[in-house]
Image (cartoon, rainbow, N blue to C red; front, side, top):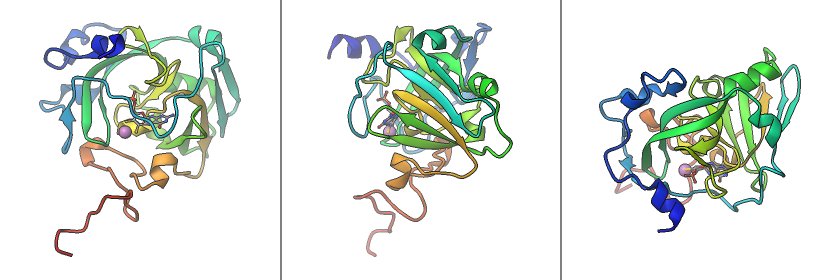
Length: 234
Ligand SMILES: Nc1nc2c(c(=O)[nH]1)N[C@H]1C(S)=C(S)[C@@H](COP(=O)(O)O)O[C@H]1N2
Ligand SMILES: [Mo]
C-alpha cells in the first residue's frame, strides 16, 4: 500500500453521521442515517478504490478551469483561484460504485452545485446536466433535479486532504444519491440542456439515472458486454 492508500484506509467501523450532526457547516446526506447504509448488492470496502474509463488526465490547479454553459442565463468560467474564492460547503456522505463496492463516511469539501448554478442562472427549459471530464471527452448525464440535491458539490478535498489526481483532483463532481459513475472526476464543464444526452457509461449500457437504492445498474434496452439478465437455462 502506498502512503495515500494507507491514509485513506478505514481501520474501524464506518464513520457515522453523529459526529457531524451538531456542526452547522456540514451537510449530512440523508442516506447516512439509514440503519443499513449499504444498498442492495453492494459490500463495504475500507479502501478507496480507483476507477475510471481511460486515462488520468494531466490537469493541475494551474491548468484546470471550469465552464458552466448551455441553458444558463450567464456562461461562467472559473480558474483555480476564482474557484477557491467561492463559498465553501462540507458534505458527509457514502459513495457507491456500480461494480459493487461502497465506501462509507466520506467528508467532501468544495463548492455546492446549487450555488454554482444559481450564479449562472438556470433557464426554465433546462432539465438535464452533462458533466464533462478532462479525460478524452468523458461525460456523464444527470437529471438537473438530482444534480441540485443539497448534498451535491464540486469537491477539491476528501477527509481533509486535497483530492489527488487518481481520484479526480484538482476538482471532481460528487452526487452522493447516485452511483459513483455520476460523480465526474477532473471536471471541466457543466452543461445544462433541455434534452438528455447519455454519457460514457450510460451509452455502454449503464442506467440513465443510477439510484443505488433501487439498484438501477443497467438500462432497459442494453446490458454492458459480459452481463446478462436472462434467467439461467434460457
Ligand atoms: N471523468 C471521469 N469521471 C469518472 C469516471 C471516469 O472514467 N472519468 N469513472 C466514474 C466511476 S465508474 C467511478 S466508480 C468513480 C470512481 O471514483 P474514484 O476513482 O475516486 O473511486 O468515478 C467516476 N467518475
Ligand atoms: Mo463505478
